[in-house]
Length: 285
Length: 222
Image 1 (cartoon, rainbow over the protein chains, first blue to last red):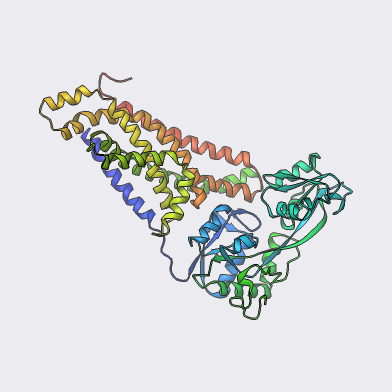
Image 2: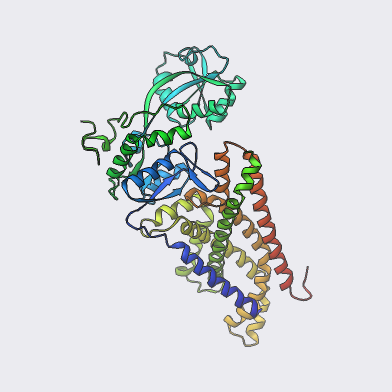
C-alpha cells in the first residue's frame, strides 16, 4: 500500500506542474494580435489539413503583412466570439460578421469589407419570380434567428398586406432540402451562401435579389483599447486597392462580384462617424 | 478527394485533438482527486463546526448543480477580469473543480462503507485518529472507491468535448473542421470520432479494473 501511495503522490505533483504550465496564458507581446475566427464557416474561415483557410484568414494575413504587425488565430464557436471580444480575450474578430446596431453597441466595427444582399431561391424548374415567390399564401423558408427572418417579418409579414407564412429552420441546408421536396416554395438566404449551394450542385436557382445591403466588417473591442482600428481600416483599403482582396475572394468564390470598399456605412454605427479611425477623409457627417 | 482520403490525411489532427482531450482529462481528474479527497476527509473527520461544514456543502451543491457549459463560460470570461486565464486553463479549472464535488461524494460513500467498528477497534488498540484513518480506513476505502470512480472517469472523458465552446481545440472540434471543410459527411466523421472516444474509454476502464483486481485484499476478491 505504501508504494502505491508514493506513486500516486508523484503523479499528483507531475500533473500539478503540468496544470500550472497550462494555466498561464501565453503572454501577449505588444505587436502580436490574437484574431478570433469561427473556423467552421466556409468560405470565410475553416480548417483544412490542419491549416486555417478562408477569405477572412487570407485577408487578415495580407492586412497584417501590409501594416507590419503580427497575428495569431484563435478558433472559437460563433456565439462565443463576441463575448470573447468584449472581454478582450481576442483583439480582433475576423469572420463573416454582419454589422448590426445591437452589435455596434458592444464592439467597434472596421469599415465594411463585404456586402451581402438576400436572394430568393426557388427550385430549378420553378416559374416563380421574385414577387410571385413571396406572396399569395406562399410558405417561405428562413433560418430561425437570422437577419433574413428579421427582415421578412419587419417588411413583409408584419405589414399584413401580403399573405405569406414563414417556415423557420435550424439551418439553411435543411431549408433548401425541404424546398426540393416541395414543403416550401422558396427560401430567402444571403447571396454568398446561395452561390455556395448553387456551386455545390443543388437543383435550385435565384429568382431575384432583395437589396438590403448588409455590410460585413471586422471588429475590435469597444473603444479600441489596443489602438488597432485605424491600422485595420487602412489595411483593408490597401489590399482592396492593390487588387489582392479581389484575388483572395475570387479564389474562394469563383465568379462573384466583389463589392466596392468602403461600401455602405450605416448611420447607427458610431465608428462610421466622421472622422473614421485611420481614414479621416471618410465617414458619415 | 473522397471523405476517406480526407480522414486519412487529417487523422494526425484527430489524434492531436485526442491528445488535448487526454491531457485535459488527466489534469481535471487530478484536481478532482486531490480536492475531492480533502473535501471528503473534512466532511467525515474534520471539525463539525458550521464554519467549516457549510462552505463545503455549499461548494459541493453548487458545483454538482450547474451545467458544465455554464461553468466553462463563467470561468473563462469571469476569471479573465482578474487574471488572464487561457481557454485550456479555464477548462481545467471549471471541470476539475466540478469533478472534485463529484469525487468527494464517491470517496465519502467509500469511507462510510468501511464498518465503523474497525475505527473503534483501532482506537482501542491505542492508534491515534489520524493513524487509524491512514492505516485502517483509507486503504480499504480507496479500494472500494475504484469501482464507482470508473464512472467518473467515463463521464469526464465525454464532457471534455464541451471545452470547445471556449476555444479549446480538442477531438470534437477537429472533427467539426473536417465536416465543414468537406461540406458534409457528418456520419462518417463522427463514427470515427466515436470510435476514438470509445477506445480511450475502454482502455482506461480496463486499466482501472486491473488495478482494482491487483489491489484486492486476499480472500476478498470478486
